[in-house]
Image (cartoon, rainbow, N blue to C red; front, side, top):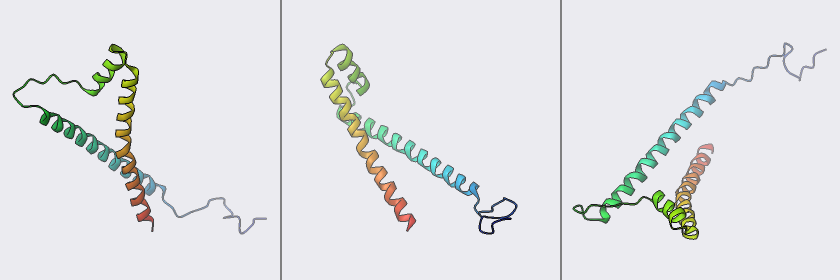
Length: 115
């Protein structure tokens, strides 16, 4: 005896949902997110180079020291671990602030799309 409320008798349940639509939308969103990340990285690099170039006159030779080299010097050459760790934590905070802001904007746009 087959229970009529349990589903079809042959065991195949058609839910009327095409999973390929979900997969395509997910791939599209991942692609857009990757493009946004690349754009942000390029923008930050451009901004850093632009700000760095404004710091000194163009006719002087610049002996620049990047932040990774500065941290290496503080950690290993100078053995000044408190300063190096403070710089690293400050840079981490500087990185997290825009990321959290971006995440909040994404949540608001998703919540706005649901209603």
